Length: 117
Image (cartoon, rainbow, N blue to C red; front, side, top):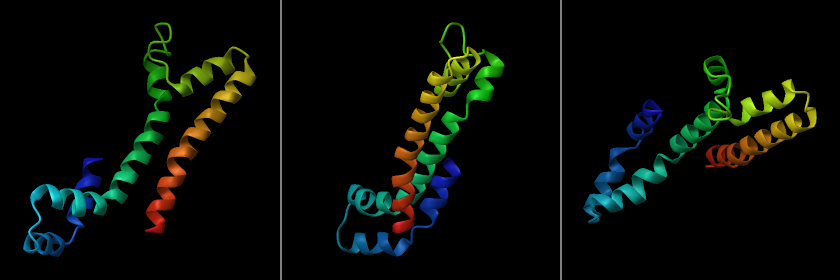
């Protein structure tokens, strides 16, 4: 994630900062009005990759703890798997639908924004 942020920062043309300093912009104004808007595609990529990575932690959690003790280390995907293994197919399907809605709700608007601008 740090490499993505560094690449986004290095992609910003220094002429923007030079023009802002000539216009009298301070450090905070340059950060808010130049840096943050121009690294927004990098931020969107990091957020989307973090969300997907968080939902894919099932294998590590299941191999190490099996979701236990109790439900202490459960994530949504391990809870869905436990419901499926117990024969509660409706609950596991509902959990999968919730995961799909989460990914779609966070991912789709971010990808539209990145590719539209």
